[in-house]
Length: 440
Image (cartoon, one colour):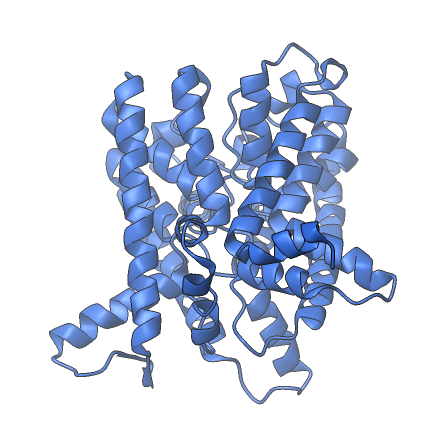
């Protein structure tokens, strides 16, 4: 083993994972700052913002994607989204496995860290499943969107379909329409395809692998983690949609069916962190905007393409609250005891996330003159890698853009991963090994 290999192996996987994403973001920013990919001049700061937004699968933009970038620039953006969504180590390892080579122990460690995989999960099987599943779903989604966009007389329907399918599955929220999907707010089928793609990415690769093994008879039942994720996703979106449907007076001019369609999509886009919108977010009432902030905070599920605190962390903390109120000695959920180390990890993840968000909101409020709630919304969207905005992103100051860039980066690698990367290797090496069959 060379000296360089030994040095790399001595660095904990959390730090290496961060360095890998930093490198990818810088390369992306350099490519997006090249003049030949522009329709109109773009500053390096805006190119860096776009690159980090793409790799982190956030979707916040300071310049218009279709107006600022030509086809070459759009291809670079969608490649950054694809790599950021699936994970650079997963794609690289898939290429290695395609050549019938074994992946290194270091690669396995980075993939486990990136996807928060529990012990006992077959890395080789997981990589193949992730990449094949992702590309298959994106291909089917693109085909469906092509026919729907063509039916709607959308220019460049083929490229629009490919771009939006990948962006939706990777929960990136980048769009080649300046008003996102507002022109299709009442198009049931486009809403449905985008929703299914976003759910496919946000629910997580562990769940789909688990469901596949169950359907093929290789497992008798879904794992505890999968059951929690599916239940949380269904309840969260259903309850949230019902509340928005009843609370948003802006939808009163629509029919009941259209109001429900718009309500479901806005809740879905926040909870899966996909970031598309079919209604101008800044026009929503303050109560609904607050609910969307809560949805963005909670986020998607572990081992998927979405961001946020994660469904399993919220579930674990909910279990702590209920068991404390009922005076139970042990923390249980769905008749299963949650071990203390997993409760501790959930609490750490939650409070570290809130601290990072609080610092981000404070720093933004010092350099921006926008109303404080708009600043809170923007910061929450950035850290949750959601991409929804009340409309202030393009008007941010240079320092404000840098703060949002930092939040998007931390949202991609995970605030707790950033914290663990700063700790000693021996202190972090066993954290994931202790997690068992529930992923926090």
